[in-house]
Image 1 (cartoon, rainbow, N blue to C red):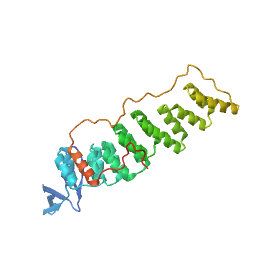
Image 2 (image 1 turned 60 degrees about the vertical axis):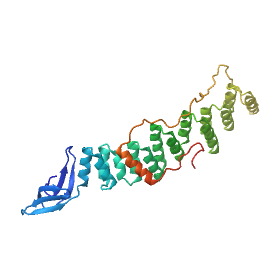
Image 3 (image 1 turned 180 degrees about the vertical axis):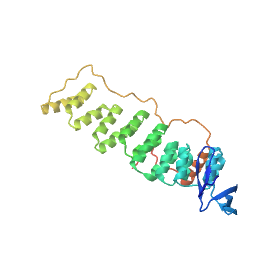
Image 4 (image 1 turned 90 degrees about the vertical axis):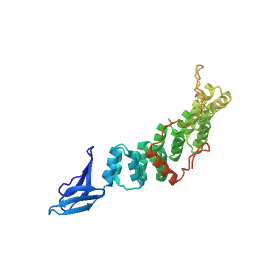
Length: 301
């Protein structure tokens, strides 16, 4: 601690500094004990000044890696404010900054930064907006947490990404549900794409027929050996006076490979939890269990 003209300031070994207290008159430090400063004023009289040492004690504990002391200060909520949050982010401790934040958007951003997907999910449920759910889905996909990816894409109604997720994880029965959902939403392209992912030729012929693409419907049916559907389409083409497209005999069938496994969440490396993870667990337990995760039953409403 040191005293320029009108302040009591602190300076840490790593160069961090700040103001502890503003003074009306200059003083000269003689001793510091706990939260009390002993000093002389310009008249030579001894004075005692009470200060709040929480901020620099907290930063010093972080610097010296005295994490037990840091945890105690976090639990007692002795610190708050945007300045300390920014400091923790800057020094690479977003997981600690989480415990000083009440604003859900800030908490969500910090949780994403430190990879705490459970806290991010809680904040996303509180915020409940499309951009937040999309951001959560991207981060959950990076971590291989497919359950939360699925839930996030359902909440923001990102059906294209949801269909591709089911494709790469081998959940063909959920892709079949996506075909029906696209049909109910009158989403022709979604219906066609999902039928491509499934290798469902009959569905593709049906979609092309319904949108009036009779030549394409005929080529698709004929190329894949659906002779009955091809004959019906020939009759429709002749009825409308349209030429019957030529189908080359060397056409190659486009079928996706059958999934050999159905991927669930990626396995995580077993590591011992840090002390700060323990605080996060306590906070999650006190705030209640997450609800609303969707399994095989379909989309969330």
